[in-house]
Image 1 (cartoon, rainbow, N blue to C red):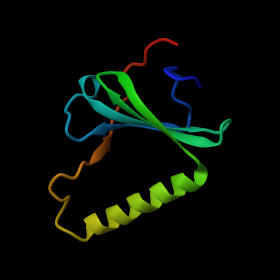
Image 2 (image 1 turned 180 degrees about the vertical axis):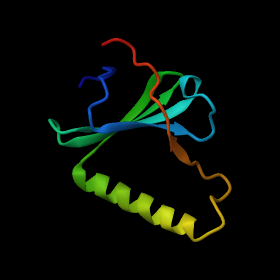
Image 3 (image 1 turned 45 degrees about the horizontal axis):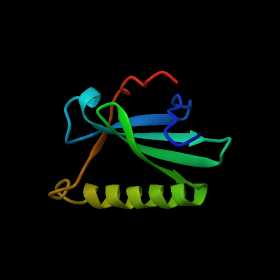
Length: 100
């Protein structure tokens, strides 16, 4: 994967819509994909159908991320709901990717 290269979403991956936007095609989203050949997960942020940034995480970093998310969900479940300013991500269909 080179800089600026858009690759098809691997079998193990997902698109998550930012809760602040109604339409994924015109809004913000997070793409999460696992790249076994590189031994990493890639988190990419998208805006208006374009990738605006990426982070590659090693398996140990993915475990830390999952732990942080699980703790956050547990805290949220014990309260009345998300705190003010909290961004909640929801699953959504992927915006159309540009041809490779």
